[in-house]
Amino acid sequence: MSKQLKKGDEVSWNTSQGKTEGRVVKKQSGPTKIKGHSVKASKAEPQYIVQSDKAGKRAAHKPDELKKL
Image 1 (cartoon, rainbow, N blue to C red):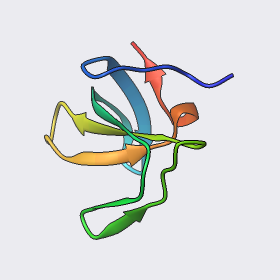
Image 2: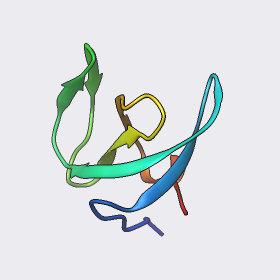
Image 3: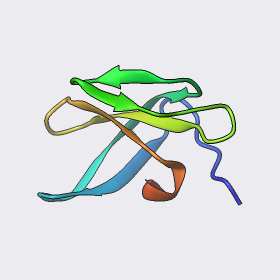
């Protein structure tokens, strides 16, 4: 079952530095690039663009990697 998150939802995710919290910026349903990295999102397998509360940086994550707070 796929998670349904929306813009502004507070979420957490794991990084190499540990657990990070932030907000959903948008649902990405097509290919894009973030910080030079390709994001292979599609309508069948969307990803979420999230922004870290601490650093303000953006990243793309699959729904299963995010935990709604």
